Image 1 (tube, rainbow, N blue to C red):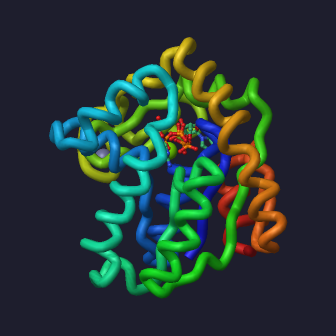
Image 2 (cartoon, protein in one colour):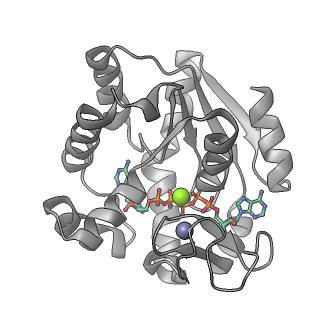
Length: 214
Ligand code: AP5
Ligand code: MG
Ligand code: ZN
């Protein structure tokens, strides 16, 4: 079981998709879960919509409740038998502490935290060129990782759209929130002895090769 960590646009979703394919791991993206909840207008969706559209984190108690309910329902299914990738969770120290409790509750362990290290100017370019599948959430990039057919998801045929929170003003706010609330987790997991740094600026196949080594 691994955690993929890194700022908005670092490539967490891109690498998670490749890990799913190669190792049969299950991806758990809190961002994808929130976007699904927003689409389905569930209780979590109604709350999350507001925070996400302004580039803030969804409050810890809701996020923790959502992931806990998700794990209770899914952890014993076939899809989880090879392990999982947490993509975008935890994002605060409180969430990290809670994850440790959840681990003992469900009797699993986090083996490694992979931090995708990448400077801000690169992130902005990535997010402005990103296109996301409206149906399955897969990420593409108009220059760095284009789909086979423009505007159409390779994986499911869904429509590729610009994510609501990829507008420049919102991206700036997401980066601020990352520095304030999520970056401290690098220290937290370094102290736990399970942090692995990976250069996130190189070609996505090379990033994947580095992760594969770990
Ligand atoms: P979330 O959906 O997790 O967004 P994020 O963390 O901002 O990260 P992104 O999905 O934007 O980036 P990514 O790292 O997955 O990059 P990608 O692979 O797409 O969360 C959204 C919101 O939900 C949050 O802002 C918050 O409000 C809420 N939320 C979620 N989790 C929460 C939590 N735990 N607590 C509270 N709130 C929470 O790649 C980006 C682009 O770059 C793509 O176009 C891709 O094709 C391209 N690319 C990727 N790798 C490379 C490469 N090596 N070279 C060139 N291009 C590349
Ligand atoms: Mg993502
Ligand atoms: Zn799709």
